[in-house]
Image 1 (tube, rainbow, N blue to C red):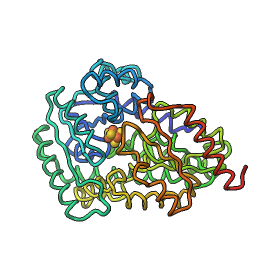
Image 2: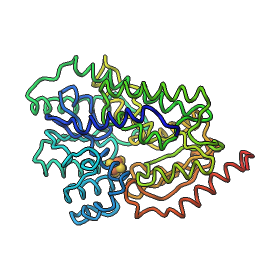
Image 3: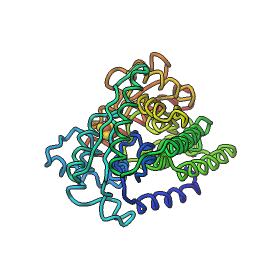
Image 4: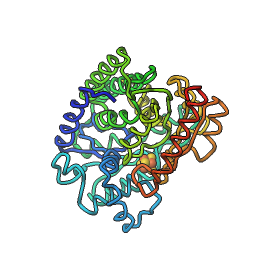
Length: 402
Ligand code: SF4
């Protein structure tokens, strides 16, 4: 990716975020109701973001075995195992990056199993460690369609969360604060969607690998003006690059859609691998998961319930297929890579026939690579390189490029 001025802004934003934590502070899952927590007056910290930092800093493998000693299995979420292992070893990459002695202490821990049950085990572990109140939201799962009764179910749970949050902070949440936070989240999310959609142009000014870095504020600062301003800045830069036909990879012959988790320990290596083979990964379900089209400040709780229940990972196979077909069409995709992430079956969508269904429906080629988000012991670099190069080559031949 060409150098972006907004990358400098991102560094500063994240520094301010991580060094600015103050009490009351809540922990929240990445697609949890951060808006409610912010409107209540909490600062919000996201353990999955910490998990990704452990992966990207390549320290996860040092900590994962420590979690195994605690009884956590070798094939469960490696965000969970690396995060708990690091906690047990009293280390965090936040020390080197921002001078923090530890992850911040929570006053309330909140998770939403819209993504997986693993977050319940993970967050309850820390609730015990900190002797902290914990609240789990359990929405209906794996839905093909969302019904009003599903929304009502989740709204009821949000209302219980608000009561608990008010008890913890000793104040009432106001409707105005919730509306304001949802409005900011909506704006941030819309802009994030527009940033990702700049990749619909050929050549694309941005790749999935850039997206995994630029996405930090839509996860950790959703519902703030800082998040809105940042994506406005990124969008302006990318629009300018697009208008000048400046592309993320030097030669974009093949356009790829990445399905599944990133491999945090290989972002740079994979980014180079695709660029060296004249391929650009221009779309992903992962980065798209933080586009929440349905946030509505005038109907805050229902719209939050809808948005957080209808995320890709919480849908049935047919709904996922339809969402993927849309992305293939909108981004002019030539091929799809399914990442079979060994410790996250929740976000590995190759296992129940989706690649074949997608090829049957669209004619687009799919390939599956085996790896993991954080545990690099599940990854064979040589095998993946060969598989991806062959896949890109085959697509290139099909397009008459090679
Ligand atoms: S969705 Fe996967 S990676 Fe994310 S917390 Fe759950 S098991 Fe871990």
